[in-house]
Length: 603
DNA sequence: GCCGTTTTCGGCCCGACTGTTTTCAGTCG
Figure: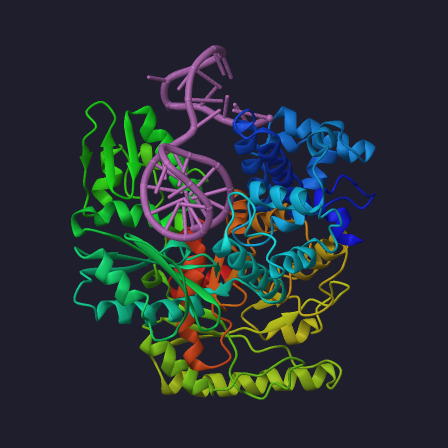
């Protein structure tokens, strides 16, 4: 029955709705409007889709905002939608949404989830075959398609009947697996294809674009742009990729294939002289491009992947690079990581974009685990202290902060813990004298226990230059409790860094539900650094929360949390995330020289 | 229905691909 309630979601229970549920509800309103009368409600459809997306991407708890009457503060939510949501929250139903959904079977909102199904196709099939039970609508449709009853319908045919069966298969696979893949893995898949495409004599330039170029934490489809004078021949070559599973689309300008592992790769082509416009178009994001094109329209230009069309003369100007494309509409070039339409276009118009941090600005890693036997309650590193230092040397670092997990408290007395820390000190001192080029900082990663206490006593903490405090258990505590827990953990003078703050593991574990305003406010006031953890499955903090933390004047450290020396190379992913959070060098503490870092740790 | 550094009224991105069509509707990014 859950799905029935989810379909249009007119029932607002006393716990409130998640952002995802509210987002889906508004998306469904747009779908319903499309079915009712697409041209009449054209702009409502756009508005509801925008609102839906805004809520899906928001870091605020929308259901709280609605209760406080503040939903209108979100860009994309105006007085009308906010009013309907408030009514839904107060009365458990909204008369307006009920009116929009009236006469549209719930099954439509189920079928819409199938790839290649939009409002029209879903509604047509539901009506045609009386698919009135949302719980069985997909199965029923499959049976109907198999018994060849769809092909005879007007506007359908043999091919579309077969395509529907294929799409249902994909829908089922998609439901059972994670669709989005991590950035490093996507990079690997993309690079393999880039190497393949570069071998074609028809390819003049090959660039991975889309969310991959914007360095999003997870990637859906892999987008690749190719400059070529022979698009058809190039696409022929592309669709013959040896690891291809099947061709999704094959056109004259662009094509899509599915490769082993179920990943989709889209290739788009343009002649070399228009490649700048293609780079801009295919990098996105969608919202960035829409905003850019609206801006251009007001200036009398129409933008596309082909170039910039002057609406008065009808002439299209071509651009071989992105800088000149942006310049032509009065903007400075915008780093791909910032292209999410969250204010970057306005800043580019005023030439006020921040100078973002670069990997070369990083002077050291403050979160690494060696294999020194600290007898921790969590995992030990794989490599020796010396090996980690050697790696830091090759990365041209100035310093390295060793931060193994705290020794397990269940197996040791406080005296024993102190002894272990002192033993590690000896080892670190020895390593120091053997390698003069890397300065060593004595840290520890300490659990914040469920009650907010730290498992190590003051005497042991005094032996450290500083501590990273992080949550490794009881992730599901109530918002108020977990917020208090973190603040208490951070309150110790030696606690300097909040490690992997949200605790999320991509595709595995969601973020903790904490009051980030309170936490960032505290960190800003008391000079506690917030970690941007580069571990590809963490990328924590993530971009939108970094932006929020910046508002509270929080300082950050970018760390790798390495458990082996080669993992120290993942620093770049943390830097990508920082750039997506609009971070400058001056916001990051581990861009500071050693002495300044030590001053901060002592402060 | 939302929004504003040319607007509180009058706008709202753009093009590719597919299947079913003979000029287009639907879907996607």
